[in-house]
Length: 293
Image (tube, rainbow, N blue to C red; front, side, top):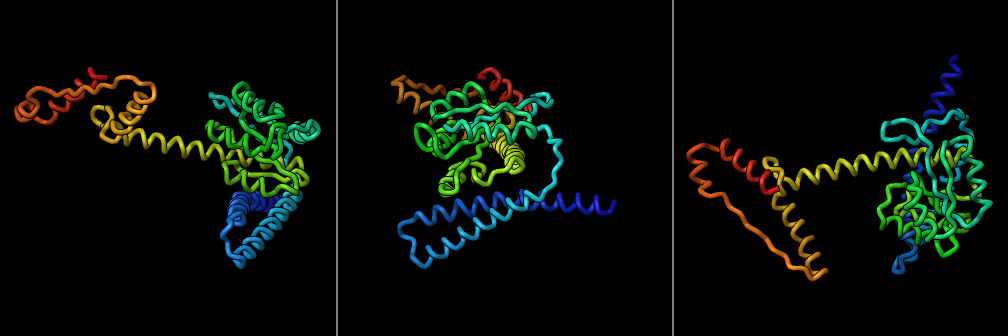
């Protein structure tokens, strides 16, 4: 019993170490990639950056080897849920022009993750699939039929898709993986080193990370919305008005439309305030705001 408990504790510690190290290593690889591309980087610093990149690659391989020692359960958790928080099959889009690569990934996932895998061979085909399939996760090969996978990642970033992206490269294109992480991908995997366990673990961790990011972003959006509204009347405050006015002026200029602004004032408001007090005037403001809306 003590050996079983110790093994489970070891597995939990190992999984924590791997999950915490991966984003850190991805940032190192992305940062050193961009440093190495700088034309004005001094030679002495360039050597240091190269050594850091080499060390990061060795650490990445070590972590992948550690993962192979993990004796995980085959009963994988439900990663995809509907609006009622009930488990549902997931949808994964894999953008790759290579059918054998698609089949390998499908084989790796079939007994580990409950999801339908859809293939797209080009950037245009992938964009159509994103609109039609609405994938929960997107895998992108660094090479597509109509160009680089980085172009597809750029289009997805501009589109603002909520699906997290995992970039897949071969051993000769690890720089493309680092560039993808810097451009918005959650992480990247090296094709020759992928095992079924590695891929399933990465997908599970990426989806969990994306959920946290969306929750934080949603909270920030709510805070921003609250900060742009007057607490009493729920109308836009000065900051919100300036932002709305800028949008309307831009639309008027773009489409050559007239733009009008109406100013309204409450008659004898100061007299009402002196006579009936602040509470009554708050009620007047709230009623007028409701009429205006």
